[in-house]
Amino acid sequence: MVLFTVLVDLFRDQELNGWWKAVWVIFLVFVPVIALLVYLIARGRGMAQRNLARRATVPEDDTWGQHPTASATPAADIERAQALLNQGVISSGEFDALRAKALGQRY
Image: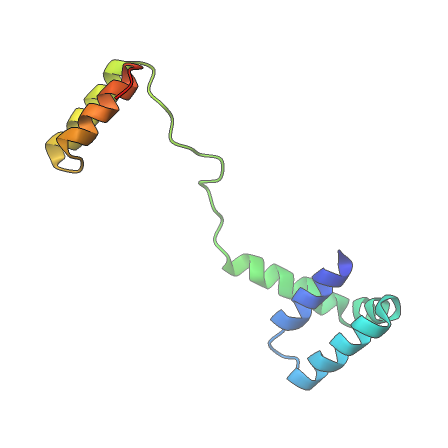
């Protein structure tokens, strides 16, 4: 897990030259434990600052866990389908299918 975190940080770092990134990757592949320790000691503070800066630029998603809820009654479902039909969003065949579904019938 730490290896992947370091690799992500390594490639997101805008200040580090491509050659240095290649050197770090080579060391991470061939001597991962030592390279991870050296990376965390040498670049750990910058790693935390880059993580905080990235989180500040990424907007929070407030819609997590919010799902459309079903209505409590078939009548409300049919009213909603009728409104969609009146707006021209759905066809009469789609309205009939939604009405049958709301009433628990097979269409």
